[in-house]
Length: 136
Image 1 (cartoon, rainbow, N blue to C red):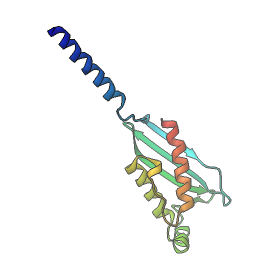
Image 2 (cartoon, one colour):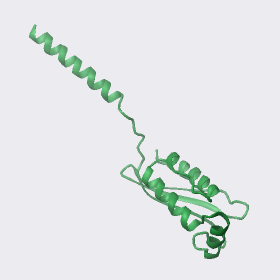
Image 3 (cartoon, rainbow, N blue to C red):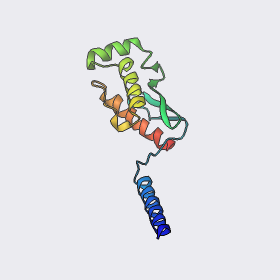
Image 4 (cartoon, one colour):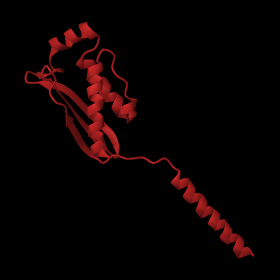
């Protein structure tokens, strides 16, 4: 009788463990490495690019830029000044904000668009999704 009770308790414990493990949150996990993507050139010749570094299964570093034959938007002080006046945002502010948000939130869908930089935000998210798809 006692051995039956012990076997029953063991069976219940095994079943409970299976249920709890099976119903736990499944994380996709990311493979460590650096994942890069580029867009096609836009009407002004700018190509957006992203490099996402994954360490220990998490997004550790993100580098985003938009550049053409003349150089990066980040390095163009005049471009940044004009964009700030026109839209209220510029690459100097938008790129780092998007990069930081992705590292903090670890989820492209949770990254909010930067006001005044909607096109850049959309491009960033699209390239980030493509790069992270390779990391899964």
